[in-house]
Image 1 (cartoon, rainbow, N blue to C red):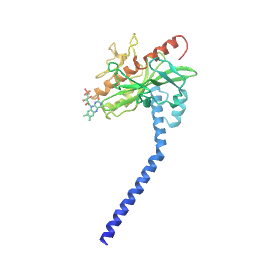
Image 2 (image 1 turned 180 degrees about the vertical axis):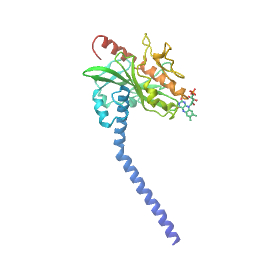
Image 3 (image 1 turned 30 degrees about the horizontal axis):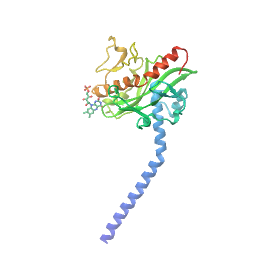
Image 4 (image 1 turned 30 degrees about the vertical axis):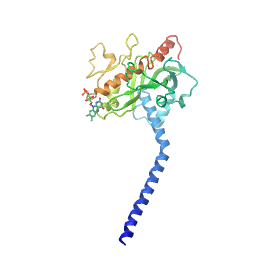
Length: 264
Ligand SMILES: Cc1cc2nc3c(=O)[nH]c(=O)nc-3n(C[C@H](O)[C@H](O)[C@H](O)COP(=O)(O)O)c2cc1C
């Protein structure tokens, strides 16, 4: 009797384990596509937040509606040319950055973002209003303290006035480096100037608060307190992606085409 009841306990526990694992794996498989879709939606939302086309409480419909104003292109970073023979829908730059066939190593002297390699091609996004480009949005990424931060920077068509910056993925500490998500901190980026007069990227997350009387104030953003490493990481990634190894060649071509009255 004693033995029989021990066996029964083990059997019940075993069956319970089997049933639970089947339930968990079925749920994981069935929810996978929804998870992927939600992640894509979150990336779109963060892109649109950088452009200010939506607010934080936007619904799925608001996001999809606002995204109709976005035109996605693929850029060859080395030449700055738009690539037309690849459908942006099927292109994933993060994946491409990990594949030796589609990535390039970043010389350490240029690697301000601390990412070691990047895709040869990147997506860029135009915000369009009645056919006219009103914003250019660039994907950016780079190392903080614990993680790689992934986000978007929106620029006005002069390519130097920042309209917004935000991150959709990072693993920095909430309350410290995680304050990159704080709307008050993010709001400071709007209106800052990304380049100096020689088109050198000069934005900087400083230590402490920006003194508005300072001549460099238009290039500076307040530091994240207790998170100098993340702050420096943001400076580095912004400067890398705006620089000559990042979107610099594309931005130069874009400016030239705007000056000539066209658009890339
Ligand atoms: C548990 C823990 C989490 C931390 N998270 C971050 C972080 O996310 N980003 C960061 O820059 N510093 C973080 N720090 C602090 C760094 O170790 C370092 O002290 C800090 O970046 C220096 O910035 P400060 O000069 O502004 O104090 C963390 C420290 C601890 C103990």
